[in-house]
Length: 326
Image 1 (cartoon, helix red, strand yellow):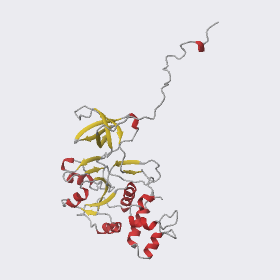
Image 2 (tube, helix red, strand yellow):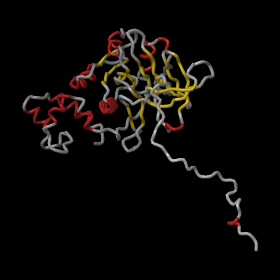
Image 3 (cartoon, one colour):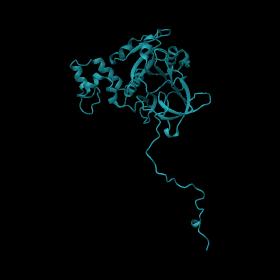
Image 4 (tube, rainbow, N blue to C red):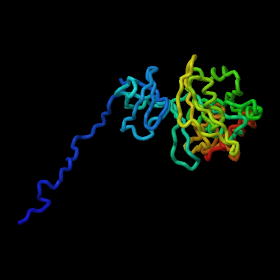
């Protein structure tokens, strides 16, 4: 009788046996590895600064896609010499203090982390060429408050237009507002940035990279012009980069220009919590209160009526809040 195929000792056709080793919950301990700061990312390579030495690294496969962003503090192994042609490995990402995120638009469910471990959000807006858009400023502010960052508003090109109306619009929110023009003294801005990690964000063409070059002359960031037809800036910075400030120290993270800022990811409670006076008053709001002007029993309106809160401050907060889809 002929032998059945299924009785043949070679029916496995050389397939490797299944692994029988039990899985373990024990994870490798990377705590003794040196820590580097991710300063920029280019085509799957991560430039990290380790003890003032620049190291190029690849990411461990176990970390997954988009798990490492500019500003991350990472544990590195393999070759961390930084010599030409050497390649280190990012074995682990340290817990992040803060993460600035955005979505492509308000209907996009996917968050896009921009930078990690920043302290301040520097919103750079031109007073003209291109014209300022308060809606965009408000959206970036909302994302910054949600991330737990301290915002600073920097108004550029003051030689082309008066900053008075824009300064007045944000004064009730108690946000530091600095006005600069070509050749202006940048010492007030330097004092704001000292010993902090500050992320610069704004439209293309507003002067972010020009400011960075003035603050850090060796940065050599590319700058671009505004399109005469569309009134929009041209993208010249294609990736975020972290740059160390000279004395007294600190970091600046320059980011590519943005043309939209979705807020699908934002938790509204994080935003009002950034304003201690408003947050304390909102504790008296009914459950589920959105703090909008249409809310019949919002404690913020009661506080205005009782002169415990100024009308301009509440109106400024609500203008910012209405940029979201809550």
